[in-house]
Length: 290
Image (cartoon, rainbow, N blue to C red):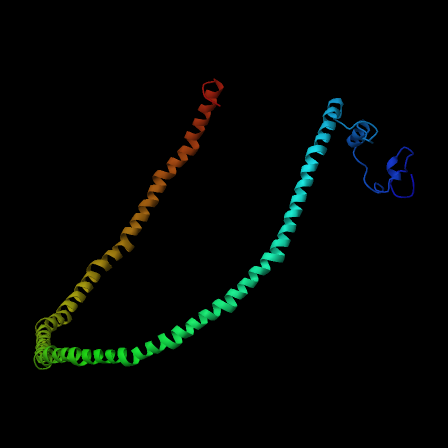
């Protein structure tokens, strides 16, 4: 043991102490150590695992076939790709693309766009817009104004005049001078009839009933209530409180003293000991249960 705690001293057969990568690492488990000793690593001195005579016989012809067939085809494919890339750069990037760009600029910017702009100026600015403005100012607008005047003065205003003087004004006059006075008269008649009927109902029914309730039924009810109170309620309550309740309490006391108490004494002093003695005798003879 050394002075480094509980760490044991290195042994001569310990190979991990000379390896800087495993220095300070935890020791592998025992099964892994035995597995490493049982199957030592391959150092390349002999044939690889799985190699044999059959593998060697098949491997060399396969390599020769790959060298003769696959490698030339691969080189030919890469050569074709390189030639295609060079043709694309030569014909497209350096030749066709600049020509197409030049044709686009030539056709669109120098020919088509000026032609379209000229057609626009020629057709719209010099022909269509002036013709349309002339037609609008001197043809369509006068026709529209004439149609509007015709509709307003020939159709709409006569129809409105007819509607106003044939329908609206007669209805207004009928309402103002016939229907409204009749409605007011009917309303006043209904109000007068309501006032008369309420006065008659009040005078013939409400007031007699109220006088009868106030002067006959209420005093009669009060008298009946006082009579019931002093002739029935107070005597019955006095009789219950002073006669029936004491008699009931006395009868309960007599019943408890004469019947209940002797029966309890007989049950506790006579019947219960007799029952216990009988049970003990039967248990002694083995007749009763436990």
